[in-house]
Image (cartoon, rainbow, N blue to C red; front, side, top):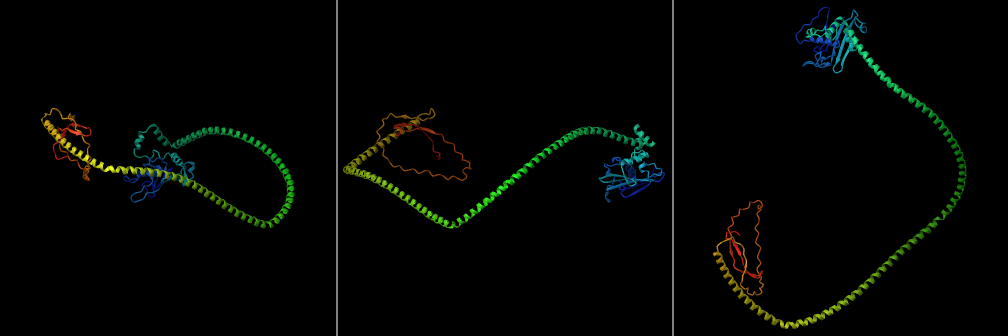
Length: 489
């Protein structure tokens, strides 16, 4: 088998359909860097069944589709077609019916790849086996890429074995062997699962047998139940027939009774008609009697009300007579008291008239005694005032001459001078002192700062003159503090 032609459409940089003919001999592709030489090798690998996006120099398999440029939009479809010469009939039996084989791989963005051989859709595994039988494939050593020679020289024995097997053309056999092993393992797994399924089915079979026995028993019991139910129903039917016959007999008797009662009802209806003919006159009599009864009832009510009113008036009259009698007795008692009061007043009037004759003489004598007492009181008060002034001046001179030995303190003593008799004081009307006028408080008094007070002058104490205290009824003298005049009270 030989490669004849490679056709690309939308694969990486080949946005337009591009066809590469591979003629017998040596075919070379020469071009600068970035012209797409490596994309042709990757297209061969991809159409031969490559599944690794990393080997295709991408992050995912959709990266092999043309991603677009600044001038051309991206594509959603990529397809690579490889044409093989099958003149020697070396292909597998499934594809060995044609001289040329067209292997195509088509991918759509987001849906995956589709493989076709001669227009027929196949599996990816079938395409990989097709190329493995020809000692090539996506991982074949015949595709020499960068650093591939160094990797072959430094390969391990297992990797060299793969190289030799590929050169011998038995790679397809190993692939088939590996696939057969996988199938055998799958078969063994299925057999193991089959044993589990059989054991589960055996348990289900036992349950089904038990249920079958229960169903058979249920069927037999149901047959017996239906038989007995039929017997009971038959007995009930017989009883129903007997009940129907008895009911028909009672029906005949009832019909005869109905005929009899119908005759009686007809006679009663005739009697009712006769009575109904005389009913209007009776109703008129009843209405007249009812009207008369209503009139008598109203008259009786009025008489009862009048009787109650007369009884209440009589009771009020009796109560008023009793009250008048009590008032007459009270007035009689009051008249007797008034007469006694008049007699007493007459006696007092005579007494007062006799006393008025001596009243003028007594008033003149009392006025003369009062004038003499006032003159004596004035003389005594002037003498007392003079003595008080003399004692005060003497005490002041003594206080000025005494040295200050100790802090002044308040002292009181009783005078040994005999107290003169005091006449009764005359009551004099003293003028009432008017209250001091309040100064208007300024509006901002609560916020104004208080004015600083000047320092208080030092107080001096002096002994006062003895004075007569009317409350304690004695002569007393004490120390009093004096403050020099500072212009502030």
